[in-house]
Length: 470
Image (tube, rainbow, N blue to C red; front, side, top):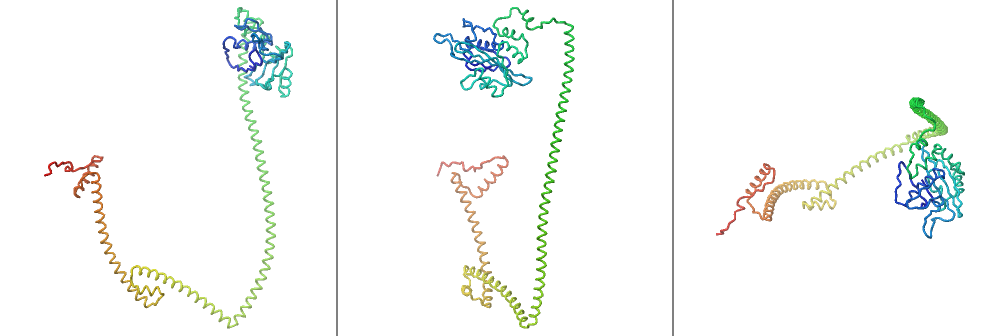
């Protein structure tokens, strides 16, 4: 529900869903909302309620202007005023919304005009009635809906309003008589008359006909339910069949497209292969011609070579020269191999002399080698002597190494003992003889294994205190 310029409400949208309770103190607008609802539902024939603190009667002009009743300011709004009362209905079956409302215009001279309307497929939104701070009048409202192509129906005369609302809401003529009683603050005194007037049908009720009608209605309902179930099943089958047909068409289109693309690709590949074959044939023809020409030139050159070889073979000097060149090539190969062996031998000899120089053996021999004196007899004699000297020195060094290793082991053992003594002295513990220390270690190991925890072993003498030094 939306109300614009109605009493103290300038622009208010109220959500009405399921059951709604309107509460508030006196003067907060409860009656104002009910009167607005009653005015539109009765097509402008409402009898307004009086508030608890309002001694005067309410009227449409007072609601439009916003009657305050204060001294110095009687109305909230003056001049030309446009008011809206709009209700939004939502049909759960069709899932569509519609608006029923009224536009009330009141001029400066208190001339009132109104327009009842129905707007289809729309929900309450401010931009339907207001642009900025300007409220649309009747003509502006019609032009706006037309420009937005929004379907609407209008009742310019009050006599046409009930018909418009009955068609929109699907109600009977009694609806417009029942609404004021439903919204009134007064209790219904004649309940019997109210039931007969508004709730029961005017025609007399025949029990037998009613019973038969109910029975027929139930049978018809069962048949309708069965037919509806069948219809739903058929609709599912039809939907499945339509989907199947669409899938078949889609599959055929895909297959046709696939075949077309495959054929097109084959044509394209054929064109490429034909071009390649044509180009290859041209190249092959050119190569064949070139091969024939080359064969002829080779045959010609072979004949010339054979002729020249025959001429040279008959020349003794050429044959002798060819033989000497072969012998010279063999000698060069042998010389290269000997040079490699000689350089390798010199390198090894130089390395050995470096070692001998460090060992100070045969210094005269080293000096001769350094001066590139490589006499073979001299080398053999001195190398034999050097070999014997090296064997003797190796044996001497082996004996010294064994002696030094034994001394090193003794020193390391002594070092470990000194470290143990130092650790004991650092922890303010006594130093024991070697056999005592070994006994302590054996006892500690055995007790630790037996008790599965660390056991500290201390000789008894460590706890004896000597007080008499004499």
